[in-house]
Amino acid sequence: MEKTSDQYDLAAEACREVFVKKMGDYGTAWQILRPASITDQIFIKARRIRNIEEKGVQMIGDDVRSEYTGIINYAIMGIIQLNATAGSRELSPGEALLQYNTIFTTAKNLMAAKNHDYGEAWREMRTSSYTDLILMKIRRIKQIEDNQGLTTVSEGIDANYLDIINYSVFALIKTAPESK
Image (cartoon, rainbow, N blue to C red; front, side, top):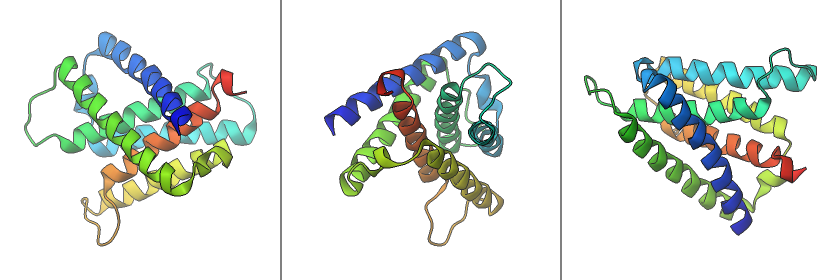
């Protein structure tokens, strides 16, 4: 489990680095996106990964690992947007990073709890299964969004985003150059 925690932290740091660099380029322009638009951005990235997995060829230079990183960052942005109150002011980059870090810690804590119960089963899964699970979670999120956020017995949008973060981190760990 200690190895998983260290690998998780390395993946999280790589994602955080991209998030910070993009904020340097664009600020927090992503805050204009409604939660449904963020869900669609995640869908686009997951769909591209699946297409590459199925075709075995890609035409655009961005590798699959960068798409998983983008999925993680968009999922965190989605949770930030879900937590924002109507009419709230735009976050400064420093405030956005603080929330980013808090959400990533929440995702890691969830992963550790599930890892305890499931015995690191994710290590025996195919990376393509993470893609399928992410796409399934996106469908669930879209349905919840279509229901104005209401569920009767299911987890909410934020829980699905947290699972998407963790599936994507698992994919980054399994596809890391040092893991091959």
